[in-house]
Length: 194
Image (cartoon, rainbow, N blue to C red):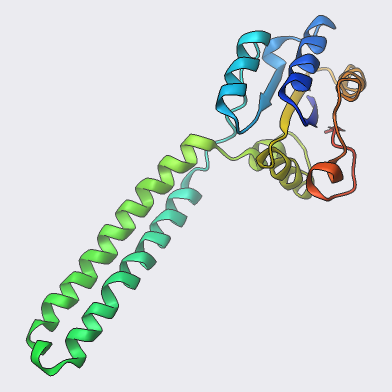
């Protein structure tokens, strides 16, 4: 399956491209789009019947990253207090309690960080990984995602046979697909076949 990915400055341009692709016989199941504006995303979905791309779940990497950040946060908060208990002679009798506070800070921070990492990963998904699985090179996938985070709309057309990818690319260019360097500072056309 060959995929064509393009970025558009305005949601109306992306909507026009999706409608043109459907008029040319591309099935809704093979089309997708993504943007950061939830209201505009819902509007495009209603007007075109095309489902927005959710990206791939961030998976265990987001959970691990969140847990590690939570542990670091727990240490940053509790270790200075424990050190103060050790340094001040009058409070040395509370050093064991301070050590337990550090332990609970690490456990609580890790658990909350892992939970928030899991929630954040499942909410937004990983568009770079999604694009990579479609055959987009890593550097371009990062640029497409950066463009999307910068307010552009990403449109994806999948061609199961690979025979109509050029047609999809031409339609997207005709409806305003911009150059990748215009959106992210790179130097390639913002609509590419993969």
